Image (tube, rainbow, N blue to C red):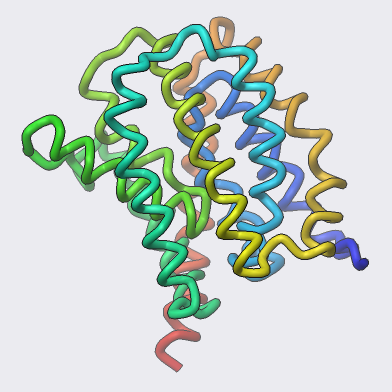
Length: 254
């Protein structure tokens, strides 16, 4: 068993876990996409996703207890089927995706979601479809991007935010939805050999940060201006996306 010892890895992994858990605990997890791009600065994005999954599951336990009574069951029933199909699609495509492709994909997704934030939704606007079709499309994309790089939050936000849900109901619904999605990913990740002893050991080192961040996020929910948190984090996401896009596309083309 070999735990990652590289100081650079922990320099990016610790902020990644804290940002993700704070976002998950109090701001509907919209910055879950930050974790894999940040970790991919030190390790492969595939390994980063594998290390993050057990940590996300720890976060989800805390988030589930905090938000389980404040979700919308009707929306969950509408969104879960598409998300699970997206996970299945990601599983079937796993062996067609090399590290350069995944790095480029993660980098481009980070750029799109960061630019979409800074340009107030003009980069990636909701597709005008009947509600059930729209729910199926965005939940499928959410499940797929969640499988590849735990980046399912932004596609789901594109569908849910225009509904103008109560803030607590929105956070509760997203929390319960991604609890289900993340636990559903355990079996395919294990079957694909991603949950190795080395990855699990490294995840165990970082996992204590998860409940701390989730509880801190829940505390911050009504006390801290979410705009400040998101502006800083999306700024880092933009820079990270630029670097990963360049690295992935350069190695992919070469």
